[in-house]
Structure formats: C-alpha cells, structure tokens
Image 1 (cartoon, rainbow over the protein chains, first blue to last red):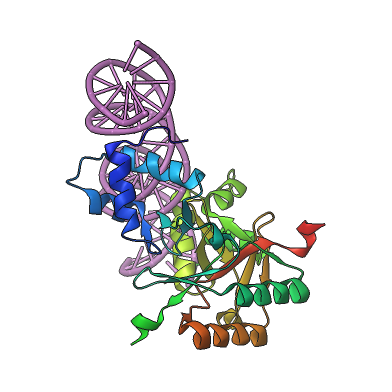
Image 2: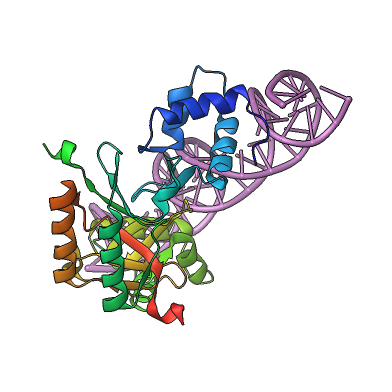
Length: 130
Length: 130
DNA sequence: CTAGTTGCAAAGAGTTTGCATGGCG
DNA sequence: CGCCATGCAAACTCTTTGCAACTAG
C-alpha cells in the first residue's frame, strides 16, 4: 500500500512511534501535527494505509463518533486482549494466558467466539486510579 | 427528561421493545421506522433522552462511526458484561459471577478497574457460528 | 521520468440545533 | 391552556474523494 516514504508519512510515523500503545483519535493526531507540513487528508490517508498494513489498529470509543487508532508495530498483539484507559488513553496488554482463559470461558459458558482484535476493554488504569 | 408520551416516542419504544438485546445503529432504527410518522430528529432526540433515562445503552462498533444502541429496560445490566455478535447484533449477557471473576483478575494482575457499562466484548454468537 | 502522494476544496455520512408549529396532559 | 416535543432545514463534526501539482525513487 505504501510505496514511497514521503515527508508526511515520516512525520506521522515519527509521531506515532513516540505514542506507542496510546489510543488517540484522528483529530488528536491531527492537532498534534498541526503546524507541521502535513494536511488533514494526508493524515487520514496514511492512517488508513497503516491500518491496512496492520501497523495500526483502529477502534471506537463509547460515546464518540471519532475513529481511534493505536500504534503497534507488534504482530504479537493479535493473540491477546487490550485494555484502554478511558482517562489517559494508555493501553494495557492482557497476558496471553489470561486472554486464553477468558476466551475459553466465554466459549464454554456462552458458546461465544471472542474476537481478540476487535474487542477492547475499557476502564481506568492503575496510574490513573491513584 | 420525558414528560409527554408522544406518538413518535411510542413508535420508537414499540420498535425497541421488539428488538430487545439487539445492538442497532441509529440509521438502522431510522430505516426501520421510515414511512412511520417520525422524523429523523425525533429519533435522535428520543434515543438521547432514553439513554439519559438509562433505558438504552449507547455503544460504538469497531470500524464504524455510527452510534449504536441497545435497548434494555433492565437495571440489572449494570453489574455484568455484554457480548455483542458482530454478525447478527444480538447481545449475550455474561453471568454476574463470571463478570466478577474477570474484573477481579484484571484488578489483581493489571491494576485495571474495568468499566462494566462501557465495555462490550465482540465476537460471534453461538447461533451464528453454526 | 512517472507512478504514487500531496493539498485543497468540495462532497459525504452521521448527528445536532434553532425556530415556528403542533399536541400531550 | 402551557409547556414540551416535533418537523424541517440549516449547521456541525468527522471523514472521504476528485483533481491538478508535486516528489520520491
């Protein structure tokens, strides 16, 4: 999907690298990069491209109609669940063993096949609880 | 929030009563009621009112920017988690005991305080797996 | 060079709101 | 009858797209 590494794409990737595991809306990303040499459409197009490349995970936040993105150049994230802090946006990774246990329980009790990549658990992280 | 029971509000409530535990977008609801005597704005206003009254739960679906609603005239739903089928939209209620177990585990292992009302687990329900 | 990418501005989807009219209680 | 709710259309927010200009390789 991406053939050239443009200045704009690099700006976005640099920003995202500094915000790994944070769940940010497209608007927040655009704000952070405002002033830099990248247009809104380039941001949206690159976010969509990165999502297709699997380097970014898109999600939705309850009570918001914005698209949220989480940057992770990590293939391993497909196997486990994620928690997202409603206050600071940080992501917590649930251990694979705990994820398996939960998925098995849901399969056994409810016959429900959990989608690990689309599911995000919301709440407040340890730091924000203080 | 609602002082009068108008024809429009009744139309909406009647429709929702027949679709308890289904997660539907505002657009789907509007489509289903098109032809009936209710305007789009009345639908949105009533959905918002019902949500504030706690009779409806708003959520967001991964990869969509639409607002989704689940009808439940059930106070008990605050204590447990919900599974939403990505295919048919049906909701499965996770037993309170199982929800507690999960919440405790997350609190203990990750220090994360799970939000039971905002979290929705996605996947495929037993019926759709066949 | 030349196909991929950008910026801009216009178009789209989904949702909200102002205001005059209409209807519930 | 008085206040609330409705319908309509305009406004808004977030996102996508067409197209000419630009640029990475």
